[in-house]
Image (tube, rainbow, N blue to C red; front, side, top):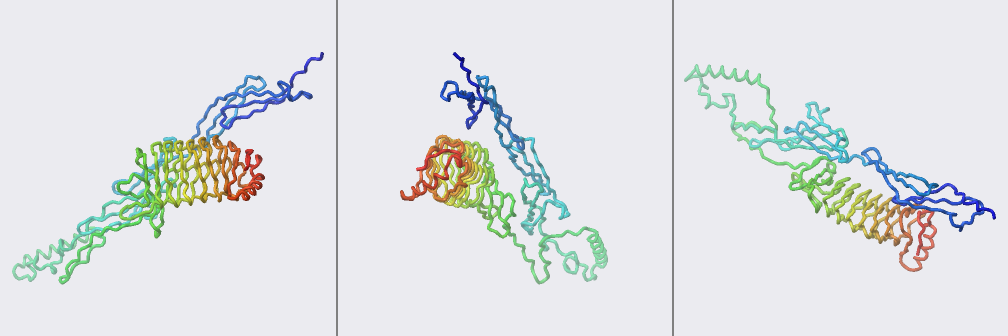
Length: 494
């Protein structure tokens, strides 16, 4: 008998699970003539991994290093790493004015690292060219009331927006009726020596006093009074000054106050346009239900609320429900990202795009009704929404972004409407319960679905465009498009 030669294995290969929780090693016998079906021709071993995380900073990316250690000495120990995107700075910005409105200090402190701090101070200067604070008259002074100056501070750093402060600092207008003319000729009753007959000495004293008064007036700095009433004549009584309050639309970028509101609102309209503001966030950290109105009123001016700013509610762990007013047409990126207690959201009817990361990691959000005007679902819009169960995109949606529904582990039902033209790369990655999707669109192409199903569990595509004949025609077309090579997943189309 000739002894068996034994197996001679080639280089081991390794495959990692999508979440890197396990790693499988494989080795294959390379000896010529070895039966492929013989025991030990192919050897595999799957082990659980360990991990070590280096957290991401504001500007530096982090990394998770996974380690797999096998019992088979041929496999040994292997590692693989996954990058963690840098957090970027997430600033909380505050502004502090001096009482007289002559200085304003802006401070930005990063939520992720409080040592990352930016400050800038704007100061009022007599030289208008160099002054960072401009002063304008908001309300003119009257004889009964001081006037108001609006001070507007601007900053060089783009982090900071223009700020305003109103200060009551314009002196009251002097009433001529209360301050008779110093010219004796205009007040004969107060100058009994006018004729110089009854008391000549007194007339001489008055003359000397007048000269002193003129000299004192010449030496005294002149006080300039805004909108001072004209001097009355002997025949014309003084006209009283009206006490009017003016309403002024604030400049673009100005934060406006709203009575009884716990919101930060910034003007977005330019001068001459219909007044509008963006909602930048709430100052009420305990609010669970938030309703954003269609309009707000500030200093007598009505502003339409048309925008939710980028990151307006990001990482708010308290809010549970949100209703957005129908004047809102723009939703900022990451507007509600990380709102881990958000359970319901009512979107405005005129919004056209749900942008990047808008509801990322809203882990309690179960359902979202997509308004009929929405056309774009951005990258990672619903990524990490682990309770989201259904998504109906039947309306006018045309594009689904990359990783749009990544990690939606409860998602079981998705319908893509007739206008969808693009499905982004890894759109349904990690949606482990989503096995079937329904497609009504005839507009998808090989290019527009490339990589769409990578990392997903989708294995069936149902075509629903209308009649049976139409469906069969589209099935034939889509079999050439939804290939494993093109989409990253083998699927059955029916």
